[in-house]
Length: 172
Image: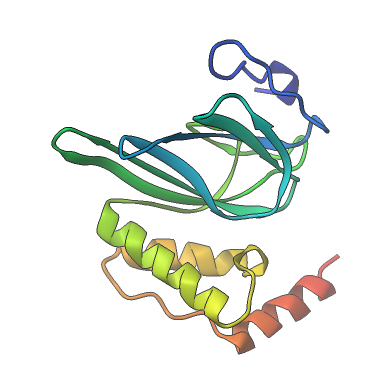
C-alpha cells in the first residue's frame, strides 16, 4: 500500500495532513470502555474529529508509544502497548490497527501485567531525565523480547543513552 492509497478513517472523513509522509494515529476516548492514547511522542499534526475521536500525526523517523485499552461489562478485554518508529516514504512497514499507513514496530506487548511493566520502564527512563522518544530503538526491542520470554529486561541507563547518542552521530 502506498501513502496515496491510504484508506479513509472513521466515517469517510479524510484528515487534513500537513505533509503526506506523516504517520497518522486514530485515538478514541470513551471513558471506561475504549481508551486509545499516546504515552509519548512528539506530534506534528492533530485533528479533532469529535469529543471522543481525534487523529494525531508523527514525522518520519520519530518514535511514539500507542496504548490501547478496552473493556466491556465484565472487565478488561484488551490491554496493549506498541512502540513504533514512523517510517519514511518508500520504507517498508508493518501494519497496525488505527495507525496509517503503519510503522516499524519496536515493541508490541499485550495483557495488562506486561503493559504495566513497559509503562514502568518508560517512567524509569523519564526519571533519568531522558525523553523516551530519544531512547535507542534496540532498547525497546530488548524489552519486547525479554518480556515475551518471561524475563526481566535490563534497565536503560544514562551510559547506554550516551553511547546510543554517540553511535547515532557517527552513523551516516
